Image (tube, rainbow, N blue to C red; front, side, top):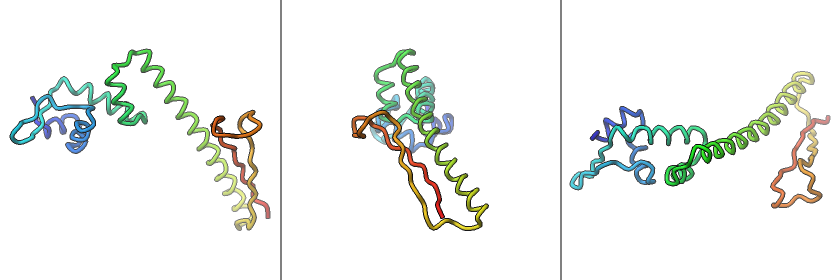
Length: 149
């Protein structure tokens, strides 16, 4: 058995994080001293810890990670979850790319005109084929900002 401090150094995960993972039920110590409350871990727990860290790095919440570990997902189920995460990340990248393009347009415009326009126009464009947007369609109208001056 390894004391929590040594396990922390070995895994490069803070003691505070290890305690939190214990609280959340993600990584329980193999033993807790009943007199001191000191936590002890084992080398065989490292792969589980590294899986938690890898999933967290991919943007999964600790609650989601807990469900993954409890349900002991098959490779196929894990692949499905990763594909879903991939789609979510792609969507965010696309949204951020649009924002970046808007910032670049504004920069070019302010460089050309040497001043910031007093007037801005926001044009809303629909992203879906719904005739009326509702919470059911789940889309947000796209916004294109043009400076007019």
